[in-house]
Each structure stands twice: as C-alpha cells, then as structure tokens.
Length: 632
Image 1: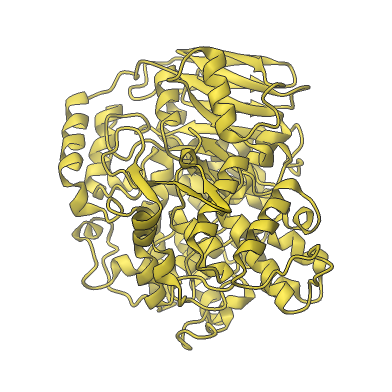
Image 2: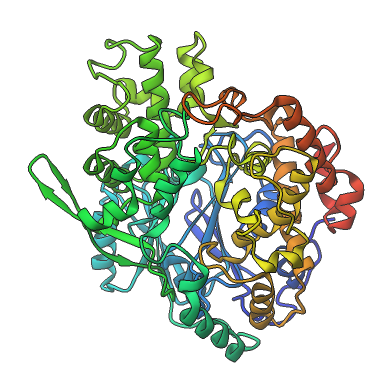
C-alpha cells in the first residue's frame, strides 16, 4: 500500500512535530511545503525512521549516488529540539557513494533544534542545481539563494559569510566544505562548523547537488502534549548527568587508555588492539595540554566537546573547529601508529575545515600505510611521501593530498575499498571496511556482539547503533536492561546464538536513538525515554512499540539494499578479523563458522530468512507489507 495515496493532509495537529515536510527541487529551483499523514509519523517517529521508507519509495533502483535521482534527506526526531539534555540530534540520509546502499549519519549541535523551531520535520532535497545555491529557512519560509560566492570556501568561513549576508548571528548552518564540493566519497556535512554527520559520504551527495549549505532560523517549538513532564525529566538529567554518563569530564576520548588495556584500541590498521602511546593521545592528555575549554549541544549540560588551540612554530590549530573526539584520536593516532597529539589535532582541523569524515580518512590512510609497508605502494606511487606507520608529517601530507585529490590522494579519496581494488595484488586484505564503509575505532574481535551488528547493519559498520558488549557484563549492567530482557551477563568475547539474541534485544534499543533525535551519551533509562516520547507526542508509548519502530526502519533499509543488489555475502566482517591481533590476545578473533551461525540467528530474530531477506510474515507484523513490492 502507498502510505500517501488518497490521504487527506493535515488530518489533525501532530503534537511534538510541525506536521510539515519541505521538498526542495533543485533542478526546478523550487521549494514546496507538504503535509504528510499522522500515520506516517506514528509508524516511523522520525530521524532514520523517516529516511528509510522515503528513500525506498521515492528513489529509482540503481540510481547514481552522485546523480540527480539520488535524494538527500534531513530528518528530525520527535525529541529533537525539546528542552531536554541530549536532544540536539538530526539524521541525514541518501544512497551512499561509498557503499552504493543505504546511507545515513547523525549530527548534534544546534541546527536540528533550530529546524524544529523553524517549522519543518524533514527536508527532501532532489535534483541538481545548475549553479551553487544554499537554502535559507526562516520561521516557516524557505528560499534558495545563490551560493556562487561561497563555493570553494572552507566550513567556518562559509558559516560566517552566511550569517553576515543574512544579518543574523543566530542563524544555524549545515554546511559542506571543499571536500563535499569535490565529491570526496567520505565527505561529511558539518552542523555549526564542528558537529559532523560524518559517515557514508553524504557531504559528497550534497556537493553533487551543488547545495553548499542549509541556513536555519526559528523561534517557536511546536505544541507539546505535556511540557511540564518534559521539563521535569530535563531537570532530573541536569541534576544527575554526572552519575549516568562518563563523557562529561573529558569527552568521548575518556576511554582511550582503558580500550588499549582491553585490546580494543585499533592500532596500525587493526593489526593490533593495544598502543604503547595510548596515554599520549588520551582525552585527559589532550585537555591538559591543548584544551581551552569544554562545550556542548543544544539544551545539554554534559558539555562533552573539547576546544583545542595550538599556536606553535610549525603547527597552528584554530579552536573554532573544536577538538578531536575519540574516533578521531584513534583513527589518526593509534590506527596510524601515531602518538603525536599535535598532528592528530591538526588532522582533525583539516577534516573539519574541508568537510570530510575523520574515521574514513584516518582508516584509509592507515590502509595506505600498510600497503606501503607491504610494497604494494612505492615511494613513487606516494609522490615521495614516506608513508610508514608512525610518520605524523606524512599522514598530514597525504590527508592534504586527499583533500586536493592530487597524486595518491585522488586514489584514496574514494575510500579504502575502491583504492584496494585499483591497487590489486591482495590489497583487499588491508582494507578494513564493511560494504565499503571503514570500521570505526572498536575491534569486533574483542566485542563480538558489536561485530555482529557491524557486519549486518544496512548502513555499514555503524558503531553508534551497535551494542557495547562490556555494558552488559556482570558488574557493569544497568538494572534497566531487565525491561528489554537483555540483562544476561554474556562474556564479551563470546560469539554464539545467545549473543545474537542480545544484539537483537539490546540492539533495537541502541538503534532507537537515531529515530528519536537523542544522544546515546546522555543515558536516560528505557522507561524515561518511553515517558519522554509520550510526553512530547501525547501518544501512548510502550518500550515494545518504540523498539518495533526501530526494527521497522532497520527492515526497510535492508530492503533498500536488497533492491540495490546486496546479498547475504555483503554481511561480513573484514578478513583481518579472522586472525588474532599481532601483539594482543591470541584468542581474540572471529571464527567464520561461529559468525555465520550467529548471523543466521540474528536474521531469524529479525524475521529475515537465511539469505537475510525479510519474510512476508514479518512485514505484515511490522505493518509495512507494502514494502514486499520491492523484493520482487
């Protein structure tokens, strides 16, 4: 069934939402506001939930990710912009140039909350503009404006130029840098200069459409069912956040040294999981050396973001671009064998200036370093750059070459999978990626449940929606997991059907954050999240209903990939994961037979068959039977 066909729009006011979708037709240079039915909101809630069915229904099979038929979608959750700590998130989705499948990423900051106040729940961008433009949204009004004078600018310069042009320093922006303009396959989109929707190359999609930015100004939240209940929960978190989250002191990099001791800190292109220089690149060291303060996102007291400033001979880092998070510290640090903290901070700044994903950039450089070590790349191939592990200056040089798409950088700008195929001679073994997307900085040989999700997830190895096995171990468990029946103390390194059960039950909870516009680092309990959604929307909301919404979106994104030609053979981990780490725990590896068994059990629990194809029965249960059409 077509969920829009024959529906009378504006059936009733939708509490917690604006009830409006903005469709931007770049080829026609027009913007149109649409009202979609209440049923759509209730079924998918928002964020990734809105993106999956929209891409599936509206896009042609086999379209070019960088062509006019791809659609770029910005989507808010029901909690986005509410006066609650941790509700600053928005999702972005499109067909990914890196994977050729379902692409999605999230970002924090203030932009999402501003869009909620400006009158829209989702923006659908389609077509390609004849010349560079940016979209300006102001309290329900939207228009396309010329951006020719902004094309080529770095992110912060673009942000400041737009604010000056609009005469309003409160305008919030989502911007691509030169990396997106040049369609680097792992280009990202930056909210407010330093909050990245980093993964799956969505900045390249935005660049291909010649859309430089979306500038937003809004001043009024939509009506909420129970504002006092929302504020009460917000007051509770403001009082208790130091008890429920660990990131408030040093940010997301607080665990660098602990991860190294556990064998979970990717080192030298995932050959190892422990790094001798871990203490030199930890968030504590960063804060004590180059940190000049902490800051946070909309309505959030946690302030987990670091500002870094370096002004030394040979290295200057502008604090306007914030500072490196855990993933960046590890991607350009341990995974490249580098303990030079200044170089890592500079790499972070280069990525944010130009709008490219730090994870894919760092991992692709680590891949090139191992190819260089193995003789698959020579000094001639790298234009004279000594690309050995631990060489900080060479890492920075190659990163700049990627940004400029010059020399070896032109090859690496399409990610490690495509680079490996071009290099040949066994280079595939050094490309640590799933479906074309580079792994984030966690080792699935150590965290086996985490690994199951990395292999199966339609958007590629999305660490933000993966379970953290350690969380559910004895002594580290939250009593709240009883409410989702996922409180079994299963060993971290166990790979089994019961671990698959944990990935299904606890995993639907971790996926849920991307539907609601909520940050996983602000740790509300399942009960509190259910109550928050109910207080915002007025809908009777059970935890079961929320988790089934996440499963609905996951299933639709899987169907999107199946339609694009993906098969069960794409749901795998890199070959390297089958071998123990070079210096770490010799028992830490992925047994392919055990992985395949756990994967099948996970498929079955999701209502998918042995080939990973959703069954008609489960589509009926999830009330998305209409999607069966795309499986034929």
